[in-house]
Image (cartoon, rainbow, N blue to C red):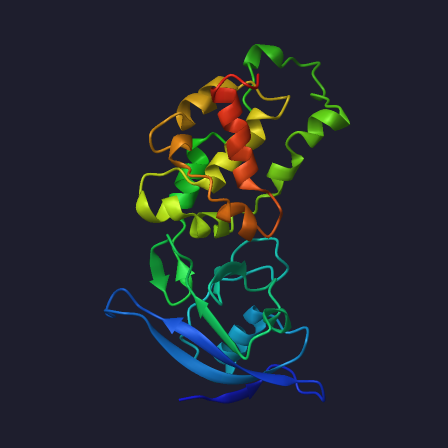
Length: 249
C-alpha cells in the first residue's frame, strides 16, 4: 500500500513513488518491493527519501550510510537500475516519477539494501594496498620520500577510491566468477605500482597475473562508468596489463 510523507514541504515540492527492495535471507525466499509516495524538493537525495521512510513508516528498512557527503562510500546501492551512492544522487536528477532502490549486485545481502563487504576488503588487502620499501633504505636521518608533481600525477586519480563497491557491483565478470579479484582491487594495485615511492611492483604483478586476476577482465568498462570519484578502474587495469606485457616498466 502506498503511503504519503514529505521530505520537505514547500511550493516547489513534487511527488515520487519510492520502491524499496525488501529481503531478509534468513527467512525470505524472494525479494519484494514496498512502495511509498513522497514529496521532495530539487535538492532532496535518494538517501534522504529512504531515511524519511525509516522515520515515518517503517523503522525496519535496512540501509547502510554514514557521512552523507559522498566520502565514506557506505550508501552504495542500485538506483533505477544503476549502481550509485544514495547520498550523492538527487531525485530530481533521475527524471522519473518512480525511484527504485535495490541492494548492490555481486554482494551477499545482509538485509534489504545492506550488503556484506568481506570479499571487497579481502581482495583489496590481497594486492597489498600500502607502500612497500626496503627497510635498509630508512635511516634515522630520513625525512621524506619526495615526489615531483609529474610523479604524483601518475597515480593520484587512483588514490581517490572510497571503497564504495559500485565498480564491483557493475562488473559483469564479478557476477560470473566468484574468485575474480575485481576492478576495485586491480585499480588499487595500479595505484601503488605507479607510485614512485613504492618498491612492491613485482610482488603485486605476480598476485594479479592469474586466471582469476587481471586476465579475467573483459574490459566492459562499466566499472569506470559508475565510479563516483572518477577513479577509472578500467584504465588502471589496462595500464597494469601494459606492465605484464612489457609495454611499461
